[in-house]
Length: 325
Length: 245
Image (cartoon, rainbow over all chains, first blue to last red; front, side, top):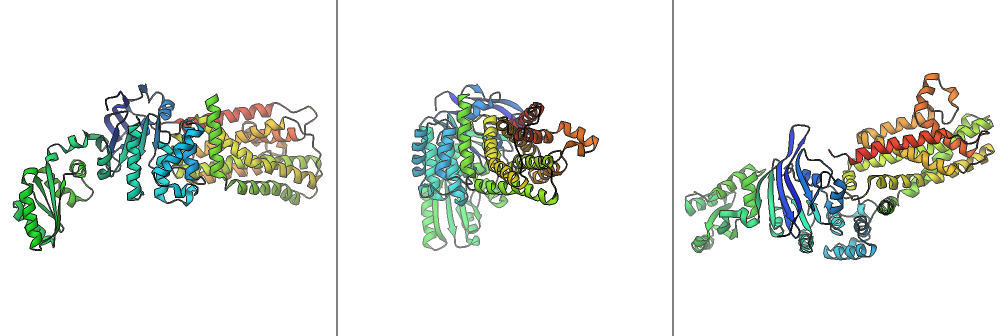
């Protein structure tokens, strides 16, 4: 994390057709060994930023420096230094994962031997060996995406960028993929990760930025982003009905910060008050008003929703109320 | 140059792998279409003289090269464009011209067996006497490169849904309204002037005059014009490919 930055994005603004602000003065820095997460809704400007780094789009304003060189002035160098898995599917029709990963590694500069070894390693690590010799059009969406991930990860250069790498991927292989992302960083690569999946990203990223309407609304480590909420827990109790959940919210703290969403009653609890809250929840479970309950740290997803809102207004407002306490 | 060739070789392999299932179908269809044109025209014109036979044979060969370059190739590119695959290719660390050259090589290889079949059918059907020039080896790739360059220009600059329409117009123009299968004198004056600037008649002439060398030897002009068209087409395509929106 202390190494010289591999990618330095400085005040990048991208305006399409003179009126659509896809990126609005975005700045971020990624060093070798860092996994940097870029979070945001659809249309927040994440993919646009990646396209500018790799030279598919040109910033209207601002500077992108890759490995010490101006990436905007020299897009061919940028492409050489950075491997990208785009959000769209890779061209896999007619080719098998083994052929595609190996050939892409060679196109990106690996020797024949290294490409072959790396392909075998990645296919084993992502558990896609059973489809090694199946042609692309016959693969499921998840295996296609894992193949596209491996095509970029096989010879990643200095910077690897993955745009929604876990879409369509099953939960078990998602974990395998995140482990490979970590592995790339541990081997000295800078990784830029675009995702909607806040919960999974939280476990993998070292630092992250949340993008909304093209602007970075907040950036830092997951702990920094949690800020004052870092020492709070979140009590979530499944009541037997919505009415009971509302009653419980009143009883808990006169519904000042506790809220009822459907059958769930959610309330923030300071770490020091946990024992009391636990007794309270256990009592209601014994009387049969609560089916089950849990205490969890305030998640990055809660922070994310508070900052950029949720497509579901009810949940959004309730979570806002919860986090505003 | 070494890295250019390295990229070209790997991209060619990539193309060949991706299209290995379709290539035999393309080859078969091209061969049938190219020989079909010769047989079809001989049914249309039963009493055919030696000059017309030469025009029809070499015309069919030219049309088959034009079909591959300006119809088949752009339609495949348009499909890729619609599926968002072009951006994937554009993000690869390879020279843009190596990418085009690797594509063009595949299309030339697809067209070659059809050319041989056409010539073979024509020799049998019309008793065609030919005196081939070694320049044929240059003429075929040049006509192909010109066609592919024009075809890619269409694919990259026209909306994918319209590519089929535009390429069909080019195809009909080449087959029926260009001095490819017949001498330019049969066209009205204005059309001849238009064709002085278009590549079709030069493509036909490059093939015709190398399959059967005229008394004065193979002329240079068609080659010069085709090189110019290939350069213009490649320059526009390369510009569109590298354009950053």
